[in-house]
Length: 329
Image 1: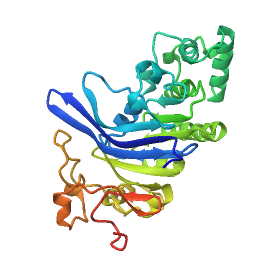
Image 2: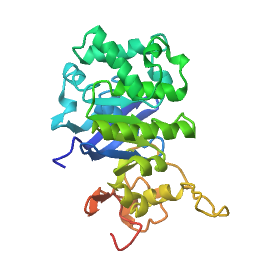
Image 3: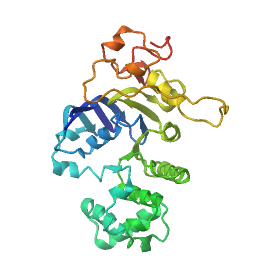
Image 4: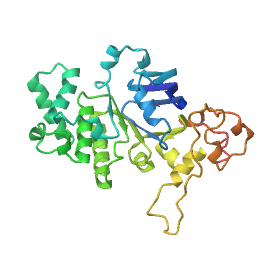
C-alpha cells in the first residue's frame, strides 16, 4: 500500500454517552489510491461516517476519542497534526460532502458568501479573483446563471441544487481526495443519477480520488473501483468492485448483494432480507460481529474469536472463518 494516497490503519474510536461507551469503530484498516473511487458500503451504524469524520478530525471532542490507529495522508499521520497544521489540509487537499446539504449550508448567508469564505481561508486570491472562481465553480457543477445565483440563499435552491453547491464548495481548492458521505440519500432518483454523473465527470477531469460512503450497493456498482464492506465498526471484506459484487466471500457481503432489487428478476422472486439486527455497539466485540445473522456459521471459532482481515486472493481481503465458497478458505 505504499502507493496509496490515504492509509487508515487499525483505527479504534469510542464515544462516551449517558448509556455507556459506544464502540463505534473497531480496528478499521483501508486505503485509497490516487485517482480511484473507494466505495464504503454497509448498513446504518456500521461506522462509515465516523471513520470519514475521523480523517478530517471532525468528531465531537467532548464525547469521541481515538484509542488507537493512524491515518496517513501522503505519508503524514493526520492524527499527529495540530489544528493549525490540519487546517492547511482540510478543505485544500481533502474535502468532504456531507449527507444533508440543508444542514451543512448556513441558511442566513448567501451562496456567494459561503463560497468566498472557503476561497479566502485557503487561497491568496483577491476579492475579484474569488468572485470569478465562485462563478466558475457553480458553472462546473452545472448551475445556470451562476453570477446571479451568488446573491441567493440556500432556501432558494432545490435539494439537488444545494447538493451541487456543496460539491462546488468541496472542490473549490482542487482537493486530491473528496469524501462523499451519502451524497444522494435525500434526493429523488433522477437527481441522484445527475449527481452521480457529475461526480464521475469531475473525478475524471480533476484526477482526484473519492471515498464514496453509501448504503446503496447500486451506487457502489456504478461508481467504485474498489469496495470496502463495513459492519459493526469493522471492515469485513475489501477488493475490486467486480470481485466483491459478483463473487463475494463474506456472508454479509453476499447478503447485501442479494438484498438489491433487480428488474431482471421474475416478479415472483422474493427479495432477500438479512434476519436479525447488528450487535449492540455498547459492548466490545468478542466474536465475529456477523455471528448472530450468518447463514454459514459452522466453525466454533466464530463464537469466540474475531476473524482477522486476511488476503484470500490478490487484492481481495476477507474477515471471516466461514467463506461463501468453501474452496476459497
